[in-house]
Length: 247
View (cartoon, helix red, strand yellow):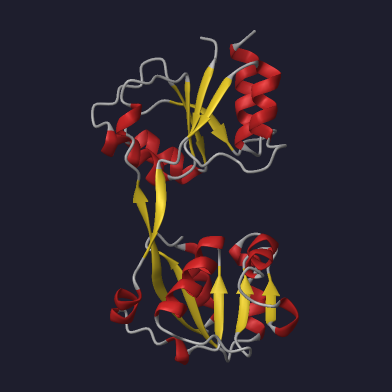
């Protein structure tokens, strides 16, 4: 079965040189983008119900651009003036760079990890006397609390935003050769929107073992897996599969 159409369950890339666009041109396939999930902010009054007072923290742990946006949104809603002395621990350079949207870099104490949360741990440990706040999603990666508890630092999690399943009803009569998923919630969203979804000849592509498990739990056949040896990204895994399928 040749591949002619792909639906990627994420927003369309904003960069012109995205590997997805290169895939389209190279193999003459049509790739559509549609987020199956989206993020909604938790109101400040609900954050207060978590017994979180921003004045009690000397350091913030930021794991994503969403955590940056929603920390500063909640701070504004709470009329909390973010002090220049606040320390920022950013999981990656991308998160640290995004922080510049809200703070002047040279006036702030910013500590940056490589990519994975575990790589940020030594920096957090170095400042173990700080009172850390972790503004996060309602679906926090379990590795993060485990790492922070192992470090024996004083930290508090706060649900500042939620991952919500999107309404996909307009896709009811649309068929794609490949559906690409990046999180277990994306798979759940598919079945919430289409409880009677039947895979048939649709190929399912998944990124990560937790997404793979969710797909298998829903009796889906996983045809394309990333990361895998030789194909560390979703686009590479799709390219390898298309090359074989479209011979």
